[in-house]
Length: 636
Image 1 (cartoon, rainbow, N blue to C red):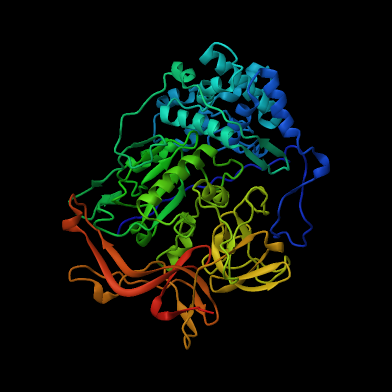
Image 2: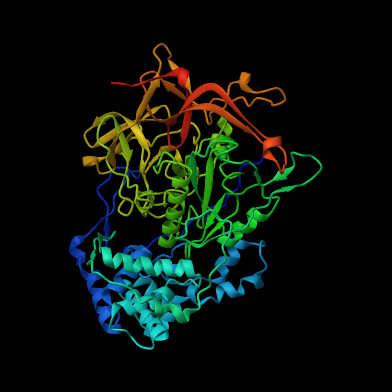
């Protein structure tokens, strides 16, 4: 049997210190497990102090204030992230970088000789924090912790870049284009120019938001062109046209993952299966979001190793959003840990660590990934919503034991709210039925308590066994015995974008059907949800309980001679009479029989399609399938 899974390491982050520009106060709780929402002591700060810091720094160094504001917005959305680094080593509101060689060594292990990293670690684009600190004659740690000094350092750096590209500090904002291109930190033409173009587009459109710590920042819209010639001296690299299946707006290239037979046995091979989707093989229905748990280059090395038994289709770099495609989308990558979802999905890996919550996924990574995924969704007719674009952690196992051991990335520190906005599909109320709710706590201000990580922006709400903070957190049959407040324990957490049937409401609490149980979460004034619509299923009359499954495979009689049937095992749950769940699609069971190394999938592989029909439902934190013959559609 193929090893369609991988092992990931998890890193426990360092504790966070207090928030910049003020103190954090939590609402009163009578239980350690209460789902908290961060609030800022408004009396301790001025809501316009950050805006004033931009104005002062722009004036001090002769930088266009709109340029300074837009650069920051497109790197961090004006968030300081408590002075903690992004996954690409960027600090503060201006994402000044300090990427250490030790960081690369730790994640690479022995996969790459140390001396091959020299050029990477000496790249000036990875050390802008030090350069900015030298210009200000300050300790770099000051620029990490003090947002005002962080902005000043970036302004000084932009002024230096402007002198290098134009010979002066320009008075016309249009002539700062080359400086912005260099500030991107990339020497890749498509990446650097795309960032600079985005900065100018944002100035033309304007931007306004309130930061996590209550700072109101505004960039007024103004018509502004850019002087492309100011970037001519930068000698940007232009890659040759590759075979990568990507939008033109991102830097993307193809590096093939290993596809190799290891012995005379035809079934002894790796790291993916050939197909010709969508012409031959399973339909592409989903796009799966992963994090790498190792570095970008380390991930590429793993997928090129023929004995890794794993390969996703794409890998996205944190520092600049660079993309490497490694498996053709027509082929079936081994990335989901569930063959049914492997069959029907494209996998996208993101450089980062699920448990390094103090470090944050970079804006460049989010934007590049969103451009890629939106392009793929449109090309392969995948709906751009959270039912079809979802995390590895939401994929079920194919058996009760696999349900327990499935992966838990990208984890609760992935900002689904922002990610969907970048794809032009924000999670908005859809009106209609009052029976369904979609989870949507505001990511930046939603900071629940955790036992193994500091409180920080997160994408989930805690689920309780009854409507009280004094009640126990929910137990899931697949996570029994785990600390319920552990970051990666998914059994008591409902995630942004997931939609459930509203089973009950008491005061400020809502209840949903979740994993065969009634699960309660705190939702005063519907601040953690939006109304939604969808197809609702429930057990047929006369069926006290019905089983749920981790895939949708054909009935035994559908398999032709010579192909052994895959018998689905029910998962460790039951749906009881009276419970209702949201269904996203009705499908016929299918199975892509691809078990041998081949150069011709049309000859050696076969798609088996049965008559048994299934509904895919949002069951708990993960999806599940129920047989259509076991359920009715709720038309009430």
